[in-house]
Length: 451
Image 1 (spheres, rainbow, N blue to C red):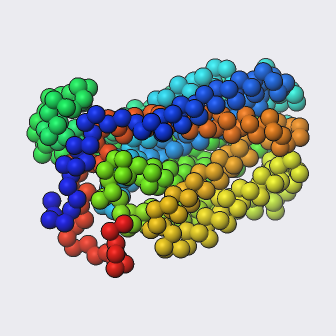
Image 2 (image 1 turned 90 degrees about the vertical axis):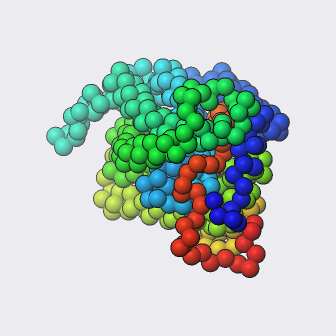
Image 3 (image 1 turned 60 degrees about the horizontal axis):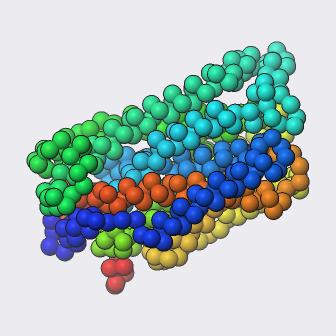
């Protein structure tokens, strides 16, 4: 370790007895309770058979799954590119992946009880009734009836996501093991007992690091490919099939990359809020947030570019089965305002703000832009899902309560899982040889670059 590097022992020592801060714990539990109340309110009072409540559930589900898998993708990018700049937040990103098994269970609940919000379901609860999937012309796709059959749909979602989660679990285990070996060597009896199930009683840090890097590098391309495929399928099936005769070939890539963009914003926010509590202040410096901010700016531009690249050909081909999806969301007064909010919060505002180099280096302004992007992508997911489910006046106070309440409930659940994980493992990849800058690296800093 270089002489001017922060002390790793301070990070390790902070693990012993660490608990989720009372305010974070209470707020996240309160958000979960709010989510349950909002969902129940939507099921029993809105009078649409629960369709809107399950639509809000779907928004919260795909939103938190995006954050969780996006965090793992950030970690594998650090591994695959041998990047050093993001190592101080790599463990924070990895802990997002611990939510994925919980997300799988929530997906199972949705598929078992909420599948009837899809217009193609034979027993749909939508007021419009079921939509026929039979080919309506010689050019129409004849396989839709098979692809969107409820049984095949459920098995496909659960199997694909489970396969990705298993790959993620192998990666997370490999990344965590050498850090636990190193931390246990210092903490001794103060280390949590469950660490032994991962370390297997090993005390050889060097061997654990070598094996960990080999496994991480082997799994990196597999997870990258699986992420692209699985999240494309999830986007096509869970969101796009809400309008079964509308399609966009870029939709999977668009939502997949925006999932990574969303995860970047959450990584930035957690890093800013938790770096003192996790004793990472000496590691998460302004150059780290600056680099995260540059990636967030790239994600903003990619989101806008691919959104326009989908809208443009749909506009100039002017085919009814493609244009109705956009017309409902961009021209009907019930939803037009939300489309405008999405445009501002997902592109105009973050693009303008993130052009500033200084904001990306200041703690609380940077946290603010992270919150803005998180809200913008919640609005965007809501705009994709809800107009296919709700056909009456919007907005209404009761509908807003259900949407926001369920979303906050999912965020509360995510916070509980990730927060408790960060409290029980080293919040920094303490044994990672790429944690410190290479001596040949050149960085340009302001006169005071310590914060």
